Image 1 (spheres, rainbow, N blue to C red):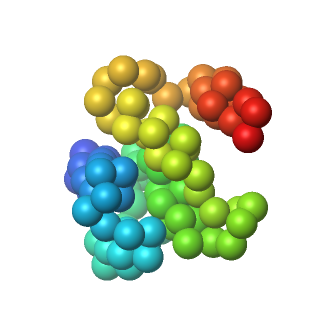
Image 2 (image 1 turned 60 degrees about the vertical axis):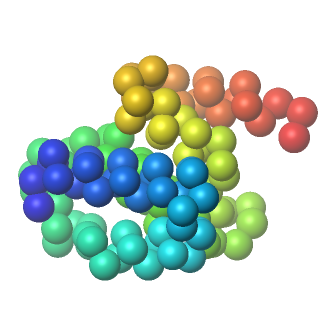
Length: 103
């Protein structure tokens, strides 16, 4: 699977979950149906930190607390997919730190 196709799948799954069209369980199930890491990732996708982060966080939507993916993480991905942010580990950490203050 090419990087472009992987990004499109991840974007659709993230958006569907974020907008309430899929539950956590349905999102994880659909992720497994559409792709498996690393078998379905081409070399470019395998080296893309953003793809890796989104993929693993979607996979962890159904993990038990405190390890499940938080809605703030999904919000961050949505902002990246919408072009409002450019992913970097520093930006990711700063964003989550600000969002999680006081929780």
